[in-house]
Image (cartoon, rainbow, N blue to C red):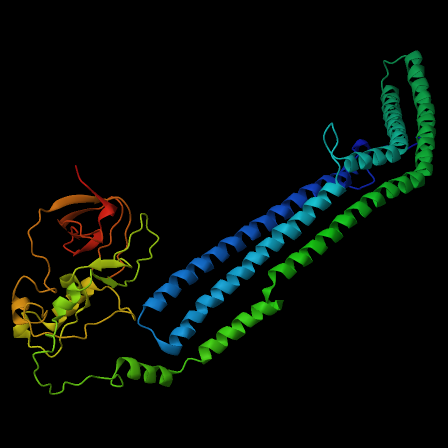
Length: 485
């Protein structure tokens, strides 16, 4: 045989090399991916900006709510100021996070958007100009080499087919020699066919080697042209990668508040405010303003005189004005609808003022009032839900029994401000429209759809007294329920 042949040679082995025909498309696709990555980065920054905005809003709402609670609560003095410093910190940090949100959207987001518009140019027929230029450049560089490669593949296929035919002819000739029935003329034909097959193999081999040599000669130019187009794509991608690095560094600077001077000052000021809290100073202030240090007009002997005006009783003094303004704590829940259990400015009559403002006398006998101290405290909590530093207490006193909330007549009669309303009311089954979580001990908690029993009608502040199915009795907002038809 003039050439060797193996059946496995005809099987083409797939290659993932860049130099294979058509494998440049991955480089071209990278251009389209760059445009998509710009969109992804913009979406990423936009979501982070939205998070910064929501966080800033939550900080502001938290600071506003707790500042009101602390200012109206029982805390006082330097510790109160230290506590409120946390709310001031939250408000300042909220402003910084809003600035971060603005920087992300107005600077970083817009910068990417403008760069993308300048780097990628859309075509009328779809796609990008840069993608088409890279595709055309690779196709032009690869076309001559691909044509010669096709010729090599055809020559190789023809050569392998000739080798196969030669092998088959030799095999038939060998078999015919062992067959006595075969005449010499037929044997001569088989021998001629073997000779022609050998000549065809030599001819196909020569052609195959020639085409392969031409392909080898064209390969350097092919590689040079492909490298040139590839470098152009690399330069374009390098611009994108450097731009992304630059943008990410700017985003990092906008997010890193630790390097912002005002951010450091916020917590330096917060620490100073907390350290200024002085327990001794607060105790001294409370002693002077709420304790034994307060001044007192002690009773003194006074001569009777007809010219002196009669001392007004507490009830008459209260009648001199239309009403008394009470300052209460607003209920700050997230439930809908919202209402205030204790109105921040409510005008009431004198007997109502006495029932809300008066505190029980810890030195009065239980027999005189008809109730224990703990019962008085429970009733007081129902009228005043939370202590207020601005809450006023009665300082005058009258010996008129009708005006004394702690007299035996009031304690045992119907005018005791601490006795629960015993007026009969028809119980009605109602259903909850919304979820409600009790803010105080005397309030009920329920879920939307729960059923309960209304025991008393709505009062002036919009509250009803009711009873849950488990027997718990308490208050709830009237507009949170509806009667069961």
